[in-house]
Image (cartoon, rainbow, N blue to C red; front, side):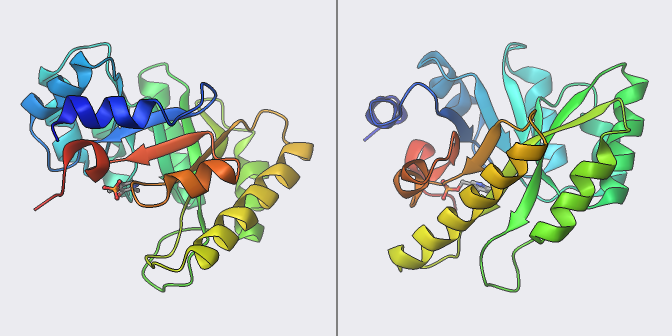
Length: 215
Ligand SMILES: *Cc1c(COP(=O)(O)O)cnc(C)c1O
């Protein structure tokens, strides 16, 4: 199946309230244009340099999302254009994003990445840390935390994945009672996005299911 057909197949399974981020990391500009021509406008990347190179040559109405781990010293390269950063995981990063956004007179929307998987390798905050960061980021005028992101364990155990998504949704709802401006819950990738949507995700990040496997 080609990119066009894969996108059509995915779009019919996504309700209107769920936003699709097409994760185009390692994929060429030609492949991204293919997806663009199917109507997609939101693309996700996990490397600053790759995203910036693509942003320079691809249509200006594309919204670029940083979904991968972000180093503080690289924020300056994306601050002028990035639409959403999914992977905020420290106060130091919040301060840097705020500082760089100010230079461009922007307010950069961000999500806090929450650690929901048991694996040691996954980045992300505990619930206590996330609460603290949201509360303390309110005083910064050029960054706005508008939701949470989480990645489930890399496993075929659907029950386990389901429980991890459920837990994140529960935490999201609890936070929203106090922080009313939270609106995005970014969870679900190619292998688990249907499970994520069942558990209340309203933003899914799909790569290989759209563009095919990465080398
Ligand atoms: C690569 C990546 C995705 C997409 O993964 P697929 O399994 O190819 O859909 C989603 N989220 C993040 C954070 C990623 O790094």
